[in-house]
Image 1 (spheres, helix red, strand yellow):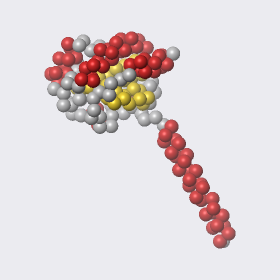
Image 2: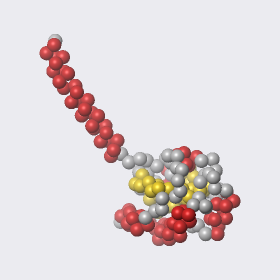
Image 3: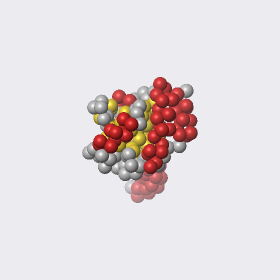
Image 4: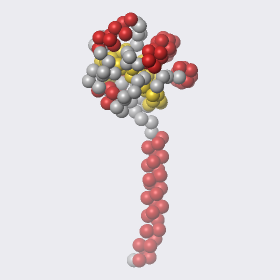
Length: 168
């Protein structure tokens, strides 16, 4: 019996190590998924992440008083206009602390062509991992896998390169 225990112990530690390694490898290889949320736009439209499957989606957390957000908005508009017919969707989520009237005015004045929502209750901020800095953007592929999380201004050359890869 002691010979059996010795052989068992000899294999047990490497087996556990192997299982831990395989588990870690699987966890690292799996990309985070888009949260199962439904955005309610300023005009009352409801858009679920599930309904956006099949499209490349950029969710951009922003605020009307954020210098980086204001700076990147024209290029975000241009990028959206360039790729919207290639299954590219932008959803701009205004932060909970941003006054709703200010968000509506900015959206109207800048004629934002993509979906805009005000996250008044902070539900999206929580669902996307407690976003607290703006701008913060999340890019998801057609299967809902998160491709990137960008804190700070987007690099539009890299974004366009990614979108060109997805479109081809």
